[in-house]
Image 1 (cartoon, rainbow, N blue to C red):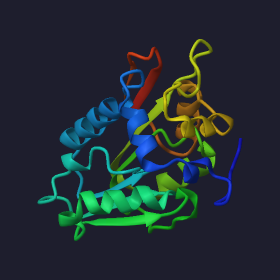
Image 2: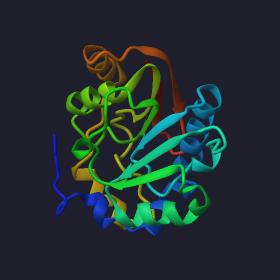
Image 3: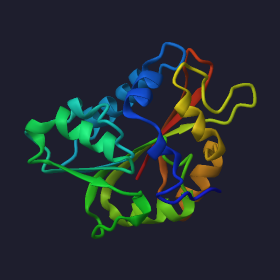
Image 4: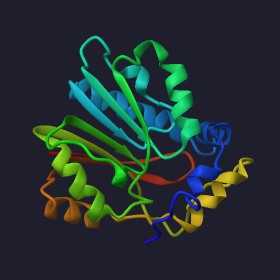
Length: 212
């Protein structure tokens, strides 16, 4: 698996405008899908302390109940994405803590969060290493929400749109079979509680899972 450093990580080479336009492109349709996923998990498992790994520009942060939440940690490797998130949710920066970093270079106390949300990050990370860290950070009665892009030989890794910078991701993506992911999760003490598969208009399928 690729483990690109700060100088070579393709996410640092994708402008926020390209990323957002690609994700909202009708041929991709991932923006609304991911927004619905985080909205649903926040409604059913409202957190006091929440970690969003791979927060990008803050898609779904409008669904957080800032009157009830105590702390939201938003992590992304791209500083432009982080800055946009901060501008969009400036009125909530008393609750939102932003960190520009690789998730595996972050450190938090054990059981620091009762909800951890990870949408489309394991395609670029070592799942065994990352899941071990996330489990240590999750409270005993907490939940981890995961979105994975499912392997499909009939579909390109990255849907072709006008935003060509996204093509840089193809050499770094590694799609995981959900069953394999669940095995790794279980080894690290994270057990699947519910899951579903969604097919988007692009034809790509995505797996969502809740773990505790």
